[in-house]
Image (cartoon, rainbow, N blue to C red; front, side, top):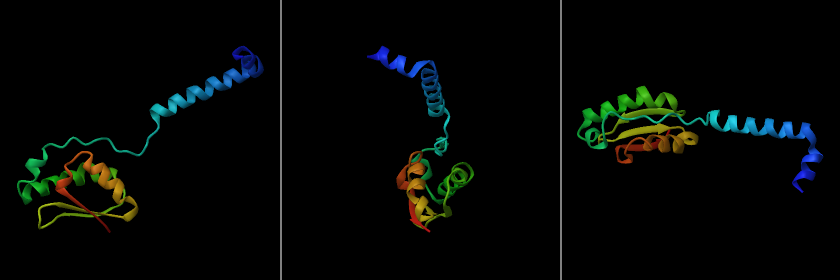
Length: 114
C-alpha cells in the first residue's frame, strides 16, 4: 500500500512533503512564543521579605529586568503590608501574574487590575 501511495504522489509530491516537514521542524525550534526568558533573581524570597528596603530592591529589579518584557503593567509599588503591588490591564493581568510567579515567590506580590 505504501508503494502505491508513493507512486501516486510521485517525486514532486515527495519533494513537497519534505519541504513542509523541514519547514515545520524549523518553525518548531525558532518561533518566538512571546514568553520572556526566565529571570534569575539575585536573592531568595526570605531576603526580599525582610523589610521595606529589600522589597524596594525587588521592585527595582522587576522594573529593570522583568517589566520591560511584559505588556500591560500600569503601576507598581510596595504596599504598607510589605508586598509588591502590580497593577496591570485586565487582559494582561493573568499572563503578568503567571510570568512573575514563575520566577518569584507569589507571597511577595499582589496583582490587581488597573
